Image (tube, rainbow, N blue to C red; front, side):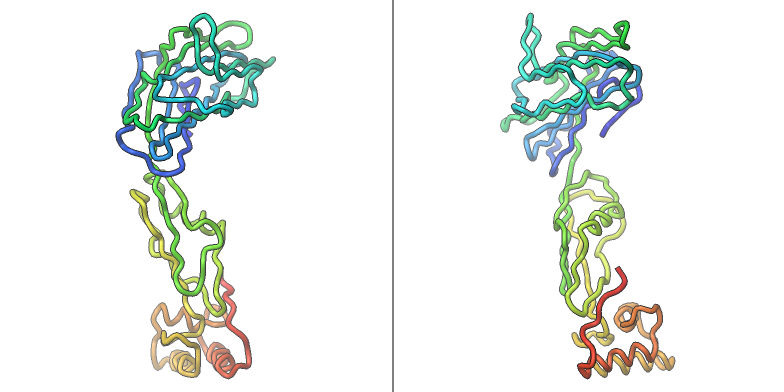
Length: 301
């Protein structure tokens, strides 16, 4: 959500996928700096979601917003939790558009959502500017006197695009993604902030496999990207696809300081997940190879 402390209403679009830069025009109307209306457009889905919020010390008001033919209000999408009057097709004395009126005995909390409305963007439109937003009425009160009367719609109007990109989670051999394999995030989102979203859905491990790594853990999202998820076979120290006596031998030699296992080998060798690699791990691998115990179960998640 975009919000400025000097603003009365801030309109925010939550977009689903990526947008087109032709919609990136930013236009401010004449300087009426106390109030601002912001529209963020998603060309990919041809929709725009407008959300208006309040600053402090506003107890009542009425606003009528219309648009040019480039934008069409989707019927049934104008909603408000505070309004005492809603109209998607207000038409009175030449003032048209969607209309919202609200009032309470005391001031609303700062940031209170006045309304949310969804618009369709006509498919043949390749640019939208502030002139496509028509503020027909912009009245606010502190409950006793008018603190804003803006009948000509002379309100700062800004059109912006927030580009969203698709991030795909690609699971390799040994596991899968339990939740969504694709998410949409705004450009510039830190990859470190994306990985917890993957964790929310969780990973599913095949028998005997554990989590190894993500292909990308740093940087930001500046385009569609894929994050590969690697898994490893628990006990397969030599990487031949099985956990057997040869792997146990590697572990014993490492424990005797005859060799030093690399990072991947060490990950596979700690089959009891106690943080060390020793004869206990070798014994567990030998038992598995002899069929005395079942598949290793990944414990560190």
